[in-house]
Image 1 (cartoon, rainbow, N blue to C red):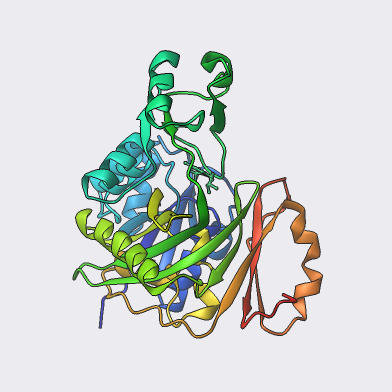
Image 2: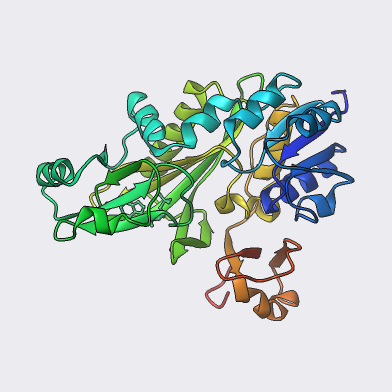
Length: 356
Ligand code: AMP
């Protein structure tokens, strides 16, 4: 029998909460580290260390309470993980965090290992950017902050007719310009890899966004088999090249002319994998915990088609209609105020019908 381990989770959001619930099912305890008291993850764990991410004393105390450490979101300072790594093993390794925190290192890494992305360039000045747009034969591009962008925050559509300095005045730090992808679909693959280098993947999932935030995830996704195979191959190649122990997500575009382009790496469980809690034998959260705890990962083994609907902000007020609906699996994250854009919960519809 594998020795019982206590897992430390850095970050207290819903991803940490659902990972901790999966750990509990495997008989494992979790301790949460978060700057915020009463966080969604702390509500389902016995112990939480509430302290800032740069508090070395608290980080060491947290490490002393656990056997192994993971994290549930990508914007944790790499220095935090470096401090923790001196005390206890951290999975996934901080190389993944480092790469995925910066769009330039992320795209460079993907391109270096042969995974295509939209064409991109670091934004330096207006003249150079216009020269690049000419090369791309395009009038416009998307400009994104290299760090801390999510759910469409920290990005703008830029047109050559605009003055660059004015267009980017609200974007901070280094910037990247990407060609505008003419995509038919957005999809993702989630891959878990264990200490024995066994690998399993979820998806690809078809993701539908509203206002740049994930709205719905549909599985199985209606893609041709060769597209599905290619997407999985890309995510698994990425996991292997990183020598991953843990779980990652690769977000992709399917272009109208049938090409797959990687958009982003999430070094963690992902909103597009929430369906796996109810519609798979082993969820993304369980495989994440297994890999981190030194247990083997297992095939997801989907049970039935599903559709996951996010409850964002005031959507939470519609919850009553789902509570009595057959096949609707309701998940709420224990957040008390429904701010606009805030992920409050989700519903997974099993064997969905058009009415769902
Ligand atoms: P991101 O923050 O990179 O995940 O982007 C958020 C959303 O913006 C994506 O889910 C797409 O819908 C859209 N988007 C991002 N990059 C591009 C691109 N290069 N071309 C077209 N749409 C994009």
